[in-house]
Image 1 (spheres, rainbow, N blue to C red):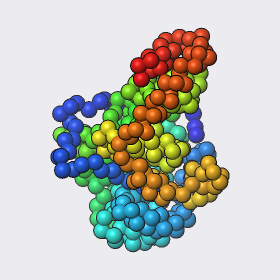
Image 2 (cartoon, one colour):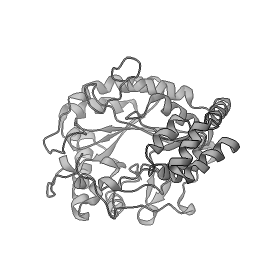
Image 3 (spheres, rainbow, N blue to C red):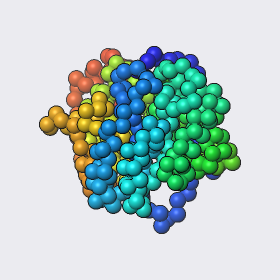
Length: 363
């Protein structure tokens, strides 16, 4: 969607240990579900200021009820087309009457006034805009949400995870207390966006005087070589089909806890790994109408996958990996010991074959 970019971009550094949020022992293991509540659009098309459809919001009460049946509150991250649509606002007002769900903010700059920038892929990352324009858009959206819902939002996510070097100062001035824009271990520099390669899953304080609590979107590495993490995944990306082969061999897969473009079974395994390692999971779910190009398809029937099914199955899966993970590692090691695979890797990938051999013999 738009041109690819190269060069420098915003790279938030790894947070220092002192900035990490220390959860009390009584906090236990918890997760949060954020809903990207936004206009209808086609990610394969160009950005457009006119793409402001909200017909899909009619499906939100049913989805909300499915989450509520499992005791899961939702944080609805609302953007400008939703906040200025009376029907959408009325739907969301009823949903947050449960006393547990809440409204947050999501900024899509191409449909959020003031309109001073050129519509482009680069400018779709709000952190790439001039600082004054980014804050003006965010202030207008924040005030609109406060006006129509009667409460000021305190949590934010940049559309396309597009924060920049001036974002947190603006958030602090507007009274925000939390942000969930960082997608751990993901790099959007090739598209003109930020690079979160150094960002962990754990919550941490950031912004002026640590005024903002960052809740990164959880990314989990699964497979026999998952301890190699982001570094190994990045190296595999430089090799022909490297990541795909590693995933098919159950060696290494990068899984973000979102139903978009993530196979359900992979997400369930990631939940098991995350809980087994004591992580706090932030699951982002973009609920869209069934005809949306972003809607994941069910591998069994070929139809749109029902998002709420991920909730129930994820809750049942939220337990330490234990015996199942041990079996998966043994299966991966047996696959690795097959001669043709390692011979192919030695011939094509050189040093990466050493990683595979190490996993095969040492687990």
